Image 1: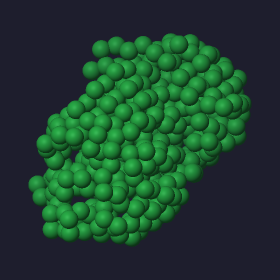
Image 2 (image 1 turned 120 degrees about the horizontal axis):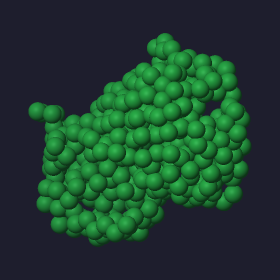
Image 3 (image 1 turned 60 degrees about the vertical axis):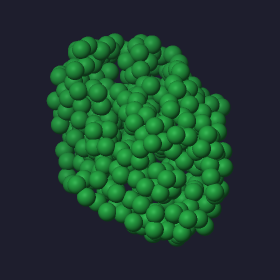
Image 4 (image 1 turned 90 degrees about the vertical axis):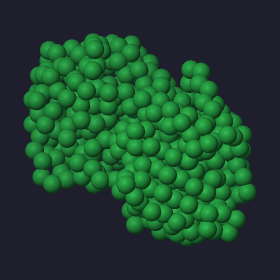
Amino acid sequence: MDKLIIKGGAQLNGDVIISGAKNAALPILCASLLAETPLKLSSVAALKDIDTTLKLLDTMGVKVTRQADEVTLDASEVASFEATYEMVKTMRASILVLGPLLARFGSARVSLPGGCAIGSRPVDLHIKGLQAMGAAIHITHGYIQASTLHLPNRRLQGARYYMDLVTVTGTENLMMAAALADGTTVLENAAKEPEVVDLAECLNKMGAKIEGAGTDVITIEGVEKLNGASHDIVCDRIEAGTYMVAVAMTGGEVTLLNARADLLDAVIDKLREAGAEVTVSGDSISVKSDGQLKAVNIRTAPHPAFPTDMQAQFMALNTVSDGVAKVTETIFENRFMHVQELQRLGADISIDGNTALVKGASHLDGATVMATDLRASASLVLAGLVARDETVIERIYHLDRGYEHLEEKFTALGANIRREN
């Protein structure tokens, strides 16, 4: 199993290209199941979760062609409507095949999903939404079995559905399903994340009629069929945010290329509050820091508020900042698993319920730590970059799920980081 070895203390300087967003690519890859002709995508990052999704689609009969960051998916001859446990157990986003399969083929059998152990993320909102559109759904032996064969024309029916909780994958699944439903579907209390907007833009290029993406009410007028299109995946705002925090912590000056500041307002505000200098020019963001930071309070909430996927990185920032910061997690109940690993590096953190109190220390000391989930892994890398001596991060397969060529990008910026098997 691979591990990362980091010798801290180096400043970061130079340029880094931000990859296409994993959380936008996954639903858009699944959207290929809706199209009768090939869907062509660019800026598809080389990530473990992307590989898993492409393998899953391949098992269903989707013809996948991949060259560098371009992927073409031809779902004209889909033969299987099943996503098995073996394919789904490592990645929660696999649930996103449920809506497209049901909408186009009238049948789906999808294993209940797995993924990072950061808390309960129930799929009941997906199921209730599809039931509101007329689907017959049963859960047996760990599988969701869904059908529309009893409905008129064997097609989902447009409906109005209010989601009790804001759910990104739920919004995406139902939006894809509604694209081929008979009639109009209105999703209320919908997720407003940029990745939802990117999916809607791709679906509209394929012939869908979707309005309101990026707001809490999305209206989808169902169409008879969808065809392929060409689409460039939006840049990864979480990868961008992670590098921005890294520069703030280590000091130096780095320009992020292929980055969109309008997707990172909450993160940029907090970095500036911490003392980093952030400059925006077109599709680039420059971060400059002397490494002397002030502690900042963080409270996660659905977009456009502070993203839960950046909480662990700012936790790391606060461990070496001047003052005391409160970090409150409102999205996932188990998303403080990185705390005990940061404590191994000398961080002063105490937890009370969903709030962590972080007292800034003059320094961290290298140690051997273990990655517990994707974003926790990133926080350990950031802490290792500023820790004295050597930090060893084990179980980094989590990192490979969401960060493309992480050690190569950091090395190019001047970090002393290497991968060992």
